Image (cartoon, rainbow, N blue to C red; front, side, top):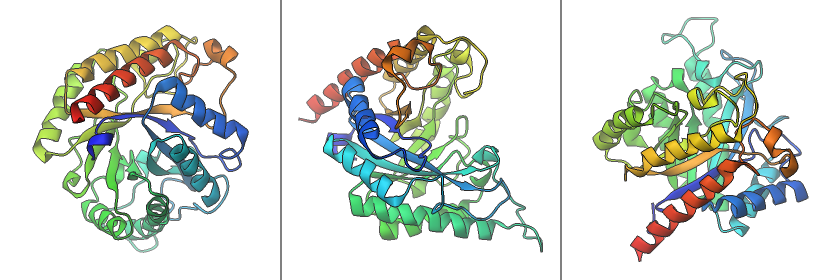
Length: 322
């Protein structure tokens, strides 16, 4: 990374990338508010494409509901207008609701059964399509995958994919592993930056950072949290990755989670930042913030927590770089 972008004070924008929602006044205002309210210097422009189920081998990224190419380009242009560094993050989801971490096939090919080779061929076409777009639009970073736990063991295929990406994209390449998986990926040497999803319980950050630190030291790569966050909901501080957890709305819970996460990470100079989760293209009304129990912190107590932290961290990095 360059000195100017050494600290990633970022927010994920636009998830899940529903066609028809990424252009127009509402989408533009959403990204403007994200930039103003959080003092971000990066954004991950993230969207999903669907395969039918966890054993399907075709990723239908050109079809609805995935955002169109023009919508993706428009979002990147808007981020550039706001002077943000951009990580383009295409993600595969299952149309039947199965989490992408469960996409899986037999390790040895069996006739008449779906195969890894077929899935990776489709996934490679999907990823290379957006890697080319990332190059054409000047995105500073490209994420080749997100939380693909069962695929992580397919080292040969991932290395080939990353090699193919580098033929069409010249920026920073990362892979977003899932929580608790940082020490399971065997091909970190193939990417430029290690990143993971930091959905750790509020009282577990020190222990998890101790574990992750060993991975970062072993591979001698920059590291940041490509995802991290907590719903503004009672109980979510103990299980921040469960977006459906029952509980009453609570801005306090979300704020306390961020305070704890930032305090723990602040002690570790190898934590290069965050791409927090998440800021939608269609925001709720600010007057509804107290009743909203999702991850977005627009109009909530955690908004100021993030803004203050990012303002300090980015300023410190910029000052030390001079």
